[in-house]
Structures are given as C-alpha cells and as structure tokens.
Length: 99
Image (cartoon, rainbow, N blue to C red; front, side, top):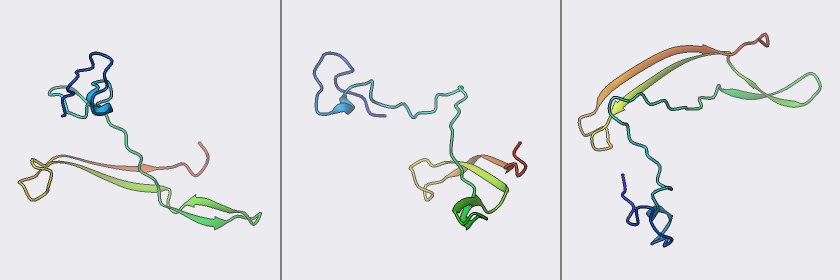
C-alpha cells in the first residue's frame, strides 16, 4: 500500500491527490477480521418483442449456478505457486411469479 508523503498534514497538496492520506483506499485484508465485499453478477439476458410490439430485455434463465473461487497469488500471477484459499458454490434463482 502506498504511503502518502504529506501524511494528510498541512494545506500543501504535493505532487497529486494520492499524496493526501484521506484519498487512499485501504484494500488490504486485516488479519483476524471478517471482510465483506459486494459483487454484481448479472443473469444472462436477451432482447425480445412483447405483445405490444415493444422490445424489452428479459432474462434467458431464472436459475443460475454460482461458483466463486478465492485464490492466493503470491506475486500476482498464476505462475508463482498459487493455492485455492476458499471455494463457494450456490444456486440462485429469480422469482418468475413476482414475489
């Protein structure tokens, strides 16, 4: 993680906004602390013509099998001794009845 040179002190901006500590996002994983992330996984869709002649976007399937794998990459590539840290599988569906 980069260390800001000004450490957020003073009114001088430095070489850019990354020099201020309030702008740097902490993306590290703290040890022993549970971290929750949110990801958007979209259902596959297609454009179809409804009974009024308008084109609408509808999902092609109402059920989706998700498989999430969390890998540890020591040097950022799969070539440098990676290992699978956690794997998660779940079946999700969207309601076709409206509730």
